[in-house]
Length: 83
Image (cartoon, rainbow, N blue to C red):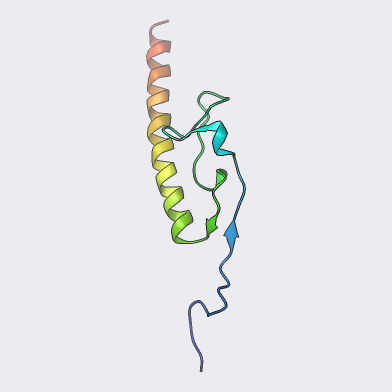
């Protein structure tokens, strides 16, 4: 019988590796070593079956990093305006 979709052999793949969480502030996704450098998604050391888990990780860390990067840029803008 023909079928479509994923088969029972589970041919999904896993991504691994990336920036170590020890060097990232998880509240902002900002580097602990380089202020103003933000990480999201598969740049981070997150292991999981590609698909739902990795998508959610990318969306969530992207939102956190984007909001924090915006706030950081606003702070820099205020500092530059005061000089």
